[in-house]
Image (cartoon, rainbow, N blue to C red; front, side):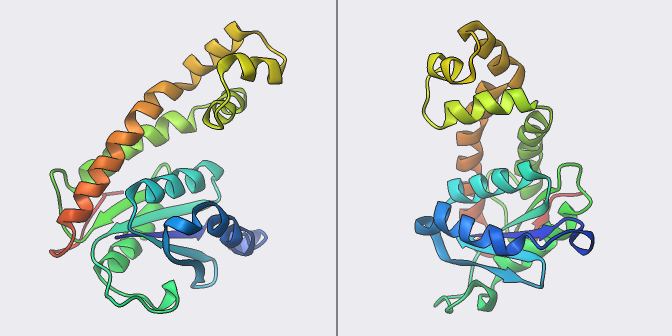
Length: 210
């Protein structure tokens, strides 16, 4: 299982973002979540899923905003599941706590921890995730405009028409955004997270160094 814990950055000096995030996560990922996402410890959000792709997509969504330190814990969760994610326990939750604490000190505010290891350790999988986050962090607003349209299913021609630019300009933005490199890396990360989950069903917690 995958536990995502997201802590709001600078919550003492800004408006509470948890209330708005919870329904957004529920609407976008609800069918893939084991329990509804919930507030934890005031300015934290927690979500639980058995799906590696969902865990990764949530992490990418939240790290993009810059408003959250995001930790993902991988491992067992005590069953049967309770009525809310706040009441759930198990090694995956311990790993998520370790991960979010590390994320607060990490360059891209993300960390991964696991209660075991698969083909690669949590540190190694987390290092590959850092490369994806580094690509995304350098992406311009113009690059994100094109990427968001392409990820919504539009063709490059349709994106060009909507943005009022030439297809050649779209191609240049796609290249500068390194979107194809990210899109190629994401499925591999999902496979590695799945493998880490299988290896994390027991063992001692190992996290990504800050």
